[in-house]
Length: 346
Image 1 (cartoon, one colour):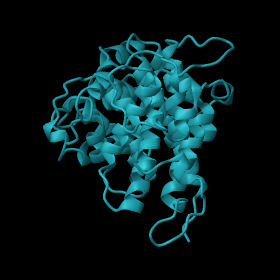
Image 2: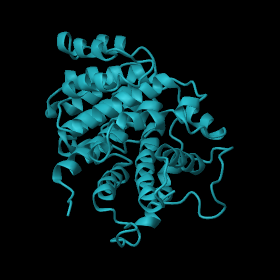
Image 3: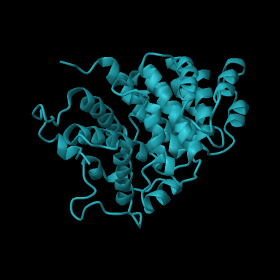
Image 4: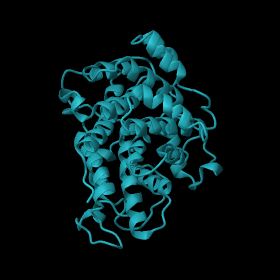
């Protein structure tokens, strides 16, 4: 019988909670108040719906046998938009929708910044195949919300290809490439690599399917961290705008500039301090949380996170779904009769 390991839990929880912490610190510009709640932005909210979408896609595949996981994740984003009261969102069913436990979390219905490319795509007719996508946005949400896809490395090959398809449901090719590289970095960390190894291998492993961020797109960040670490001027040069590619490059520089687990807080504050640093902080938080584990996250800040409990439950449930399959299957009964209600498989 396969069992959830302590390492899996520490990595998954560190990744998801690190992303949320970076997102919340990024929203402050690095000027974290001495007390009070640290609020998520729309990036953190959407990342939560990515995780629940992955869980629900696996449940559908287990029970139905036919599933297009990126479509199920996109459905999760429409539930987020519906909760937010965004007009023009297709209702997937007349009653009991949005469904699942995440739809019952009140704060996820509160608007915390915009996600214009995601919203515009969700309001339009769905385009499932990324080869036929008409979306053009290069924005960082295409990266930050898809980073948890790297955690499927334990159960499925090439999480980067999956991340491309998820990002391409709302964003253009450059953002999808950044999502592929970011998820592959997480996937390599899951396999036990440090950040530098994970980045260098991700560039090679994604070379066969990225279309815009070709060659070695993160080499400048790696070189910068080796030669001139922890310089705000260098980070600002690597992150000149709010594109997904810039957020990824900046996050690699930050993660490599602050390699020790005791430096995680400083890393996120540094990431958030530059003009376009909020998505850098979220991405760096996911990388560093995954590589060091949940116990490396600063307790004093995590305990103030608005979505701490939600993110932790999602990370644990993601591991539980793939290892224990609580909803059962055609070959076994459910061990948790309420699991399907929590994560309806569609």
